[in-house]
Length: 140
Image (tube, rainbow, N blue to C red; front, top):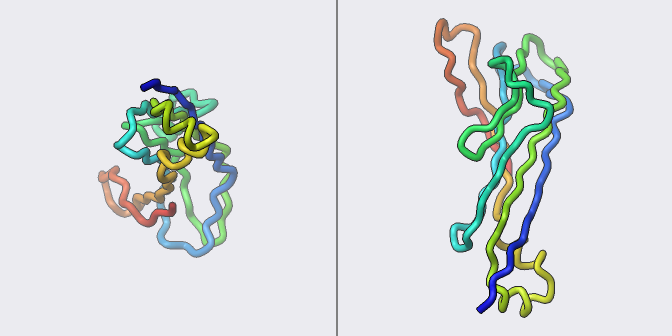
């Protein structure tokens, strides 16, 4: 039995944050992650580009998830330029016999990388000293 290493790379670019309907004034953040099948040995690397990391509002990576910079929303229909890039690279160790049977490695790799998810988080101005973001919604 032979093994083949495959690499899949995804990129998510957040250009602008457009607030269609004001949920509440406050700070918003988008978080993204990639779910990989636990059946196959893999290594997930998540990074951001052009991240100086000098501010608490900067984009970053934590526990395999990437989070955008924090944006402040004050008005309905407000548009904020974000320009964050999130990169996910998955190294997979695949069964060589299954790769040969599938015809192309990408067919097998596509089945093992399951879901790219996006989540929206929020913290209000009125929470006093609380700096904890609250989960609002997600998309797959």
